[in-house]
Image 1 (spheres, rainbow, N blue to C red):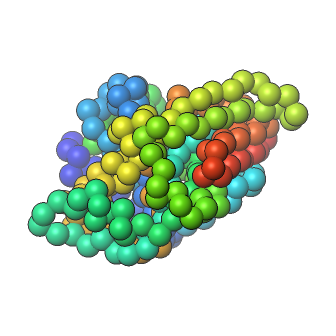
Image 2 (cartoon, one colour):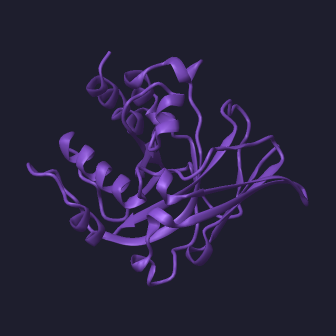
Length: 234
């Protein structure tokens, strides 16, 4: 019934699934995303082992009802951020980051319609976390990039045929992906949860999600930060 109960239910997922937590996702980091699922703030979900893929991999389409790919800025943590009584600053959080990656999230939900489920139920459903594709680390020097203005180009292909293209930027992600990461660190801190060294955090789609059909491929170009791709298997 409440967000706290939703997070409590979500916390049982690693145990009942037999999977380990390897990171976190943030849902609804744009006003459009929040309006789409009828929430007023971002939502945090767990990335679980066995559901993370490398760039170029086949991602299962079977059973996925949402059928979208979401190009995202993802961070790997280089230090633990343990719960504390005062909020973490943007600078503290970024100092704890080891690397930045281009990424694609392939979300899904058990709830139908998920757009009307509400915050508590969406949190219990792991904030629509399903599959996740992690690209290679961005080259050194990415720390000097203004991620809020960083443009991302995406394409969806059927075989060699480009079905459509789409553009986005870091401004979609709470104004800046680094702001979204800081939000997550403080949200976990408020729940008594440590953001661990080695965990990946994917910060939310940086464009309108890419509609997929089984057999499609999705490709996202983050410019000097790298590229990431996936195939949505038949």
